[in-house]
Amino acid sequence: MPGSAKTVEARFYQSPIGSEPVRDWLKALAPQDRKVIGIDIATIDYSWPVGMPHCRPLGGGLWEVRSAVSDGRIARVIFSLKGDDMVLLHGFIKKSQKTPSRDLDLARARLRELS
Image (cartoon, one colour):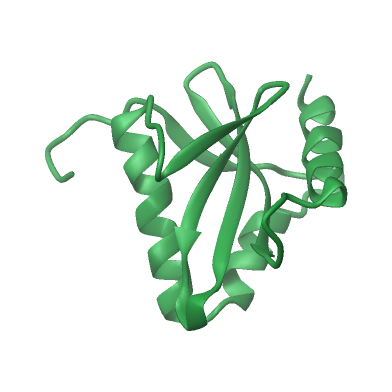
């Protein structure tokens, strides 16, 4: 990726009170898990549009970054595109096949705040 130009710029969603929940979530993860997720986000930064296995559309303007982290777990970062920005709206460790509706609802609510 060095020497390549970014196609989108990842940035963290910022709440009305100034917190960055995805950044906080990432900081709470083990360093090796943060690294994996960071590489996957950078892949999208430099190669957008990207499909499976790195990225998948969720509908309604939402996409997910798909990461395999330690101990056989899977992490997801839900994002939306705003111009040339990839806004990271919500991150979580996935515990079931289907993305939980509460995680999608939270990402949708944060997306509405951006509009």
